[in-house]
Image 1 (cartoon, rainbow, N blue to C red):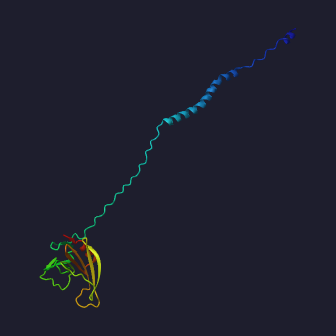
Image 2 (cartoon, one colour):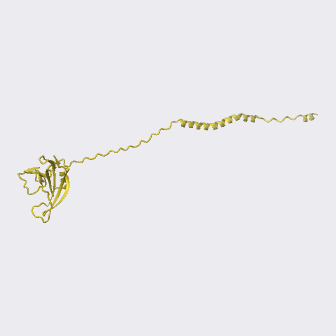
Image 3 (cartoon, rainbow, N blue to C red):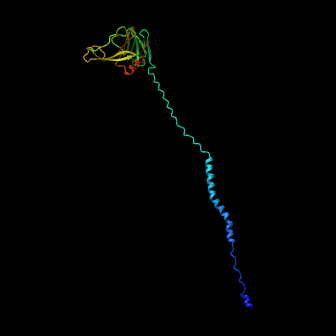
Length: 228
């Protein structure tokens, strides 16, 4: 009897599966969604903030490179030194002119009825001027200036060969003659001379140079000739 009761007992019911894990998972979904949203939105928010910050940040001011200005200043023209500044001035008011000459190279001979008469200075000369009763007009001196109502201009003849050149003295037309002695010429005739003829105000002028005068001295001498 006891054995029969034991076998007829209803076996214990199987344990009901726990739903603890399922409910726990459901409770974590909102947290996972929030975490995902944070992971997605955080980079977007950072990008947005950085972008807005770069928009609001003032752009750096770029100063334009100054254009270099090149100032071209004309160089002043050098003043040419007056190489005749130390020359002595001879003035003849009666004949209406003045002219300068280097008295360290020439001695002036003061003679009756003569204008400017110069001879080459010698080592023995101690005076700048010498006065004579007559200059002995046997010929021309080194440099001479003559004024007269009438002057005969040279031309080629049996004694000299003459060439002519038109020039200007103090703005006045002039004629320059170069006279060269011919080999067959006889007598006291200069080997070479240069004579310049011109006129102003009804007066005729002659400037004479002999072969001992350099071209530089002649050019400077003529450049100082002025009508007064």
